[in-house]
Image (cartoon, helix red, strand yellow):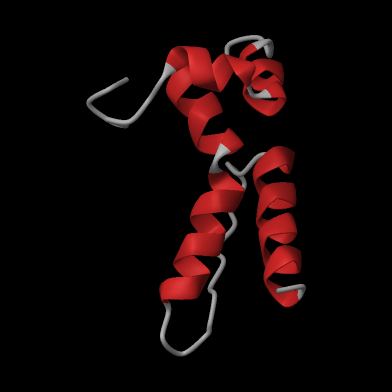
Length: 81
C-alpha cells in the first residue's frame, strides 16, 4: 500500500468514517477504498491545476455509483468556491 501511496497511514484512514464504511464492503481492497475515499480531493486538485478551467470526465460501465457521486460532489464543491 505504501508503494502506491507513500503518505498512507492506516490509523488515520480508519478514523475517517468514509474510509471505514468503504472497508466494510464485501471484497473491497484497501487501495480501492483509499482511492474512493479520496476521489473528491483528487478531482478538486486536478480541476484547480487545469489552466483552462476545464474538467473532463470519462465514465464507463466499470465505474461504481460511489465514484460517480464523488465526481459530482467534487464538481459541485468547485462551483461553490
